[in-house]
Length: 333
Image (cartoon, rainbow, N blue to C red; front, side, top):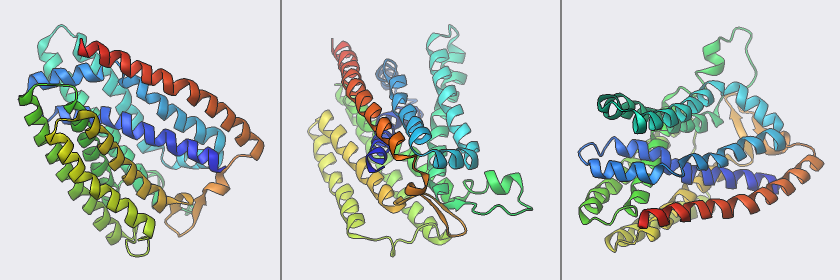
């Protein structure tokens, strides 16, 4: 069970890192309207590989479905509205990215399709954040006889805490995109613009992180004092230490170092959430919880799932690395 959970968290982390930077690209693009050259650079960087990142989302769904069927059934039922909206954002984002690239009408390509691409790029991370908020004590436990559709399927995630989490995730993805895009251009003027965007998105992410803690404590979803452990302290310290390191790498124009540091920051943030969430998949408003142990499939199922996942990872990771290398080399020529 522990190994299966490790596979699940690894796939989730990979999707948030690589897919998050792609979603953040749409958010970042909305701030680059006066810089068409950077917008073109962003689109070229995203175009060849962004769909490949969804392999990690597929892995998350498969591991949940096979390895933790109880959690899959309950969460996909109780959270089907935000999950459906997140998937809708993924579909619309891909559609409008393609329409904008090939539509012969400049007005539609640069106006309507660009607007819808950016909006759908923000929709999905907002929903991801709201789903996380619902898992932290927002889901209904026992269903009251007089419960309405809104009580069961809307109110658990459509909250102020959910909104704070959604905006935080969106800003974090925009920050990742700005850091990743820094390495896609060698123009000093572009670097100056992206430096400002990195600082701006980091500032917004920091403020929204404070809002998540504040609103979470106010609504009772998060208890910063009770949950403050040595591991949480180490996670927060690690994320803070990445800030001066990123600044030095940015001043030295070391894009790969910047990406590694930003990726480490994301790992620290996810690690803090994983530690807070453990050992539960979801916490209910009545104080009960759906634990990982309660959700796990029989041991023989987990054994064969782990064998299959190990084989798939051994094949997929080198192929994805090769894919990124091929297109990076193509852009360098």
